[in-house]
Amino acid sequence: MKLELLSPAKNYEQGREAINHGADAVYIGPAQFGARVAAGNSISDIEQLTQYAHQYHAKVFATINTLLFDHELDSAVQLIHQLYNVGVDALIMQDLGLLECDLPPIELHASTQTHNASVERVRFMEQVGFSRVILARETSLQQMQVIRQNTSVDLEAFVQGALCVSYSGQCYMSQYLNDRSGNRGCCGQPCRSKYDLYDEDGHLLRRGEHLLSLKDFSAAQQLEQMVDAGITSFKIEGRLKDMDYVKNVTAYYRQLLDNLMEHKNHCHPASSGRCQFFFTPDLEKTFNRGFTSYFLQERQPMATMSTQKSLGKKIGTVSNINKNNITIKSHETLTAGDGLCFFNTKGELEGFFVNHVHGLTFQPNRMPESLTVGTPLWRNNDQAFEKQMQGKTCSRKIDVNLSLCETDSGLKLSITDANGIEAWATCECAKELAQNPERATDQILKQLNKMGDTIFQVVNINNQCAQPYFLPAATLNELRRQAVANLMEQRLAYHMAHRGHCIPLDERQSNTTPYFASELDYRANVINTKCKDFYQRHGVAITEYGLEHTHDYNNKALMTTKYCLRYELGACLMGKNKTNNPTPLPQSQLYLRNNKNWFELHFDCKNCMMQIKLSSKSTLTNISENKHNSR
Figure 1 (cartoon, one colour):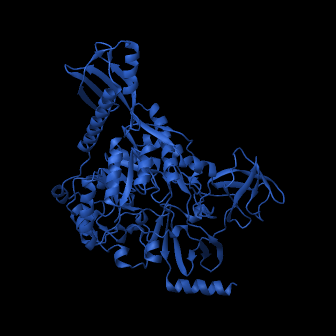
Figure 2 (cartoon, rainbow, N blue to C red; figure 1 turned 90 degrees about the horizontal axis):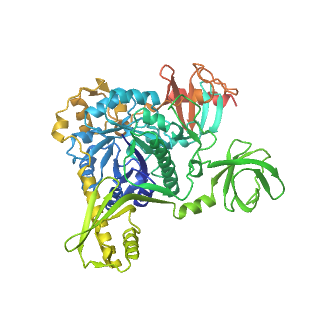
Figure 3 (cartoon, rainbow, N blue to C red; figure 1 turned 120 degrees about the vertical axis):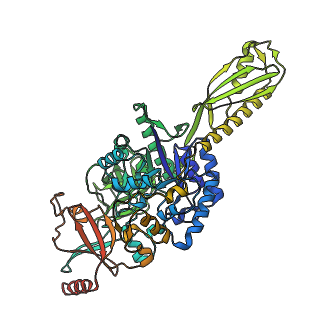
């Protein structure tokens, strides 16, 4: 079984570094129709990335994972053909209307935006032509195992990165607030905003907190369990993150997977080459809001209500404060320029910079007034680590064996890589017996071993020449260079010959596999006629178009989430989360307010889910009046 580490590529440069740091595949967005508008790339840049990745038999996946209007379908299909022609290995897509279009024979992956949260949904996606399904982030280990037992499609799951509080593809809050659709690649991240929480009598329960902002996801401790549950592709979120994040997080999971595969003999990496790192990967040293394993094992507190910003790494506590200096208790080394932060007496994240350092005592650029002895400190700007990341951080090489032998008119050098791919080069040359055989043999080994800045490293050289010949360095160098070039050509050809394919259009259009529901509403995200045709062919009546098309938000769930605010505040109606310091919440209706916008919270306790809906005008009036009267 091949295990794939899948990393984000904001652009060619970050994609290249992801490959260098151990990614078996990267995902990148073209200039249009990707779920990250700010991370679009030209066809030429994507082609350059495919050429680089394919050297290692690593793959490049393109994201055409937005919903498409009718007038955009032709352009999207044309773009997909261009991506296929420049070597992209698979298409990550959301809009099922594309299945009705004349796509190239490119492998299709069902985006997490298609709401792959059940066995029935994953099985259906497999039956209609997807070779891989990207599971909803909310999927538990137990659900993964059940899905694996009932399907044969490749399963991909997230292992690291930011979390959407709503089920992916089922969030319409940004669309409602700013006409910026998350399903169209331009989410305004309203889940990271501050909200007030009210009861139905207008009483303010929580003021100005990030009530919907989640910690970042990390499955580092559950990686082996995910493998055992049937996951074969492990996805790192972060196409909007910086280069340090891509290098650091990719390297961290590369090491985890390599260590895991050492004692799982049936598991192998999905690409070629071994990585050597010149730094110690640490998830806490790049952007993070703290970590949660979300719903992998069991429901747990997962919000970061005090801030939506990066915390960095917790480094210790304050042990002494005087007029100009602060001393901390820590095992970390401080550096001038470090950025430190703490939660002040208002519960807000406050930060400052380190100016001068004397051991564990330092002078800040300003003395924080609310800082007290015993306060925990985090470092969210690590100068030494950032400087280290700007230098040479890794080397990824593919092992090769060389064999030198004679021909009637000269020499032949064969080269075989770790994948068993072989190439060779020959040259005509005079074979002069060496006067110093030992020195001549050393010269041959020395010159053939020089792989320079290629992606190869020699592990063995077999000199099969019958006699100890004197061979000029220039002859050996040219023979080696040509053999390496031929091997690279063979590797690229092998990769392209084994590229995945999708079901042809005529087979897709004749596929009438019944869907597991007879009708679907706005949550099916149908905004073009092709998508409607697709569902109708599979026995589904579309009762209404998606909200990007209708803009009808009344009585609609703007968010559907397994995250529960009652549970998070220790006030679960089912008594599942009794904390020592719960927020007293009435059992009646609850409301969120963001500026002038009011939303109702609906709790589906049977399924342990929460929905956020737009409040009615009468409700808003009552709450506003009660709020005014309670002052």
